[in-house]
Image 1 (tube, helix red, strand yellow):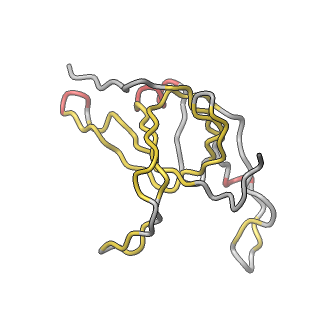
Image 2 (spheres, helix red, strand yellow):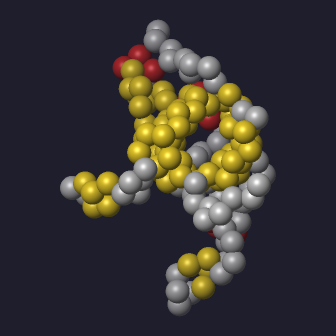
Length: 133
């Protein structure tokens, strides 16, 4: 049985968003203050910085560019009952404290003996206009 592995995984601290608990403005259809977040969870992941930085136009429309991606094993996500979503915050990659947001998810590593996708690529982007030093 084929089982994928991560190359040099590090601890990734993810803060999931909780849309159901977020207060929305009915007229504007947007959050009133900030998106509510659940408790942080630590997952092993493989980080790759600097893959695409620009907005990309495809047949399906505009795709937001990314600063890089993190690959997670599906079995690690399932073991902790974590479902990553767009707008989840990444607070730490290894020892590096960051403020990144997931902008796109891509299932990968489809093996017939594993029943489908075994890896999840989470594209991230730094949305902060300024950084604190």
